[in-house]
Length: 332
Image (cartoon, rainbow, N blue to C red; front, side, top):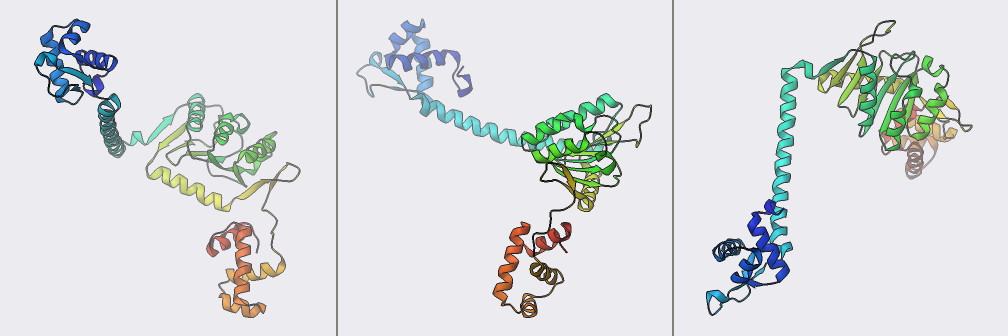
């Protein structure tokens, strides 16, 4: 059991005996453990040299009177375990780095490692479930109408992932939102934290998990034949798909929950009054604070205070973020 800290089976028996007995001489030790005196003497000398035991009497009158005691386990064995743990941590990091280099080189040598073709509905559904069950941070989705593998209302894996904190950003085709049960399903997901948007049309069905792996069907309409899909692991192709998602996300209309619990499409009502809207329009137009203050008959300090209030309402940290938020929410 203690071989991991450098004790062979005999030395472990000797050490455990000395921990229990507090101290013993060579003869007592040999008798208790059923050893000959020479073997007990050799084990004690080896362990003494490595700092595992020490003599209880520093300078005995005769060799036969030498008595030994165990050095405290947390001192001698704990330090060895810590050094081994540090060595293991270093080795683990080296192995992970080597494995990543190997995967990268393998992907460059073999395109099949980047793209795997899933041949049928069963394989596609298994991957959809597996990817979401193992998602750690983020899932991006294009959801189109007329499901070919799994209807959105069957996707319990998303609900489980949302509950454990995974971020979902989903764009729905409007035709899909007209299907029975979909609006209630999307509303429930939004209540759990899903960020949902809508567009009239989407180019493909798509799921990207943790920006590491994507799943995309290879046919637009399956018909009577078995659908196929591409499982994409890293590489430029996945980067293109993520960029495609981001471009559609910026154009999509947010889906929100109304006060009566129904799903609504559109932006939040503008919280600004007409004076603040005018101030914001001047800012977005690039008018300097000094000129804004002059036009509005205010001090620059007042202009800056009102802009800070507007930024707080928008949840913006910078003026650039404020302008982006105002454009997205159609405040102007």
